[in-house]
Amino acid sequence: MAVSTVVGKYGIGEEMCPYRLVLEHVTSRWGVLVLIELLERPHRFSELRRAIGRVSEKMLTQTLQTLERDGLVHRDAKPVIPPRVDYSLTDLGREAAVQVRGLALWTSERMAEVEKARNAYDARKAGHKAEADSRT
Image (tube, rainbow, N blue to C red; front, side):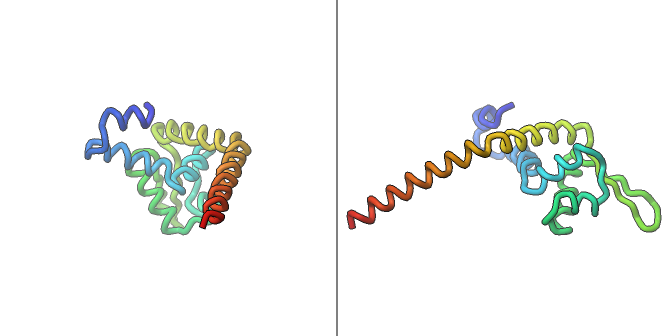
């Protein structure tokens, strides 16, 4: 279901909030990376942190808890010393991760076109600014 379909159907009111929250969780800065990384295989916390890079323990913990609450991530704590916790995707999480990975791949494949568009935009803006400055 397209976002525009949902926005058109539910408007901007309270009914949209649960949908938006899940969308925010799945597409958040760290949520995307966690889902894509767990798509390959289950990870321990430290493995996941290393694989993602530049994420604090606090943010990774919050992201995992949020995705677990949404039913996307499974946390398996083993009663051993030292404690061992593995994170994996649920079926729902795997479905979401495939979608997110598709978007990430599209971004990678289209980056040259995005850069071209950005450069054209910046050039137009710089031209408008120079034109406005010459009038004053």
